[in-house]
Length: 200
Image (cartoon, rainbow, N blue to C red; front, top):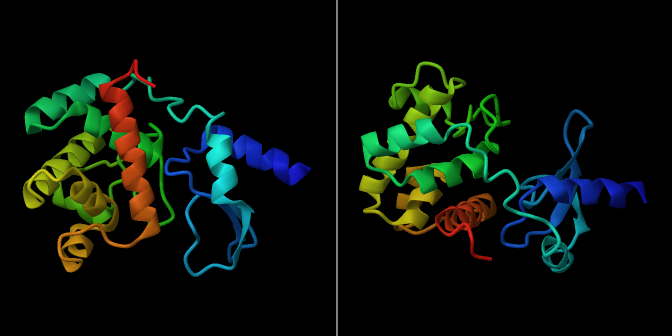
């Protein structure tokens, strides 16, 4: 009963775009984790199957928090400066950090747009936890990927998540990485909602 309660709480705060299942595993420190991405290289068990997740998502507001306007002025400024769609920038931000400027992933990605340290340096970001600096870097990186992949949004997002080399290595196609494919679905879902806020 306790497990079911915990899972329902997680569903309220975790986007389940693409109707992924919920998986549980214990890490090296003995900490139990829930995720909607199949844990690669981990011994895991299925907490909620994809079929049941599909049913449950009908009762969960996947756009919760999307109305956050704390960074809209900064997004607009850098989107105009670099010629990028502000809705795409915001959708990436929502998917990456859920608008948490102090977000830090277990892989080392930092800030609102979850910039890896090498990417942050490449984009001349001095402080990845400063919203303006981070959004500037993330927007510049999206612009760079836009030019590399000739405006193909799916390839841009795949490269943002998995790195441009992975996309190029897979003959300019989305690499078969579950996390990357889930990320693309998330961003496209948020992007669509931001472009058409009164639909659905």
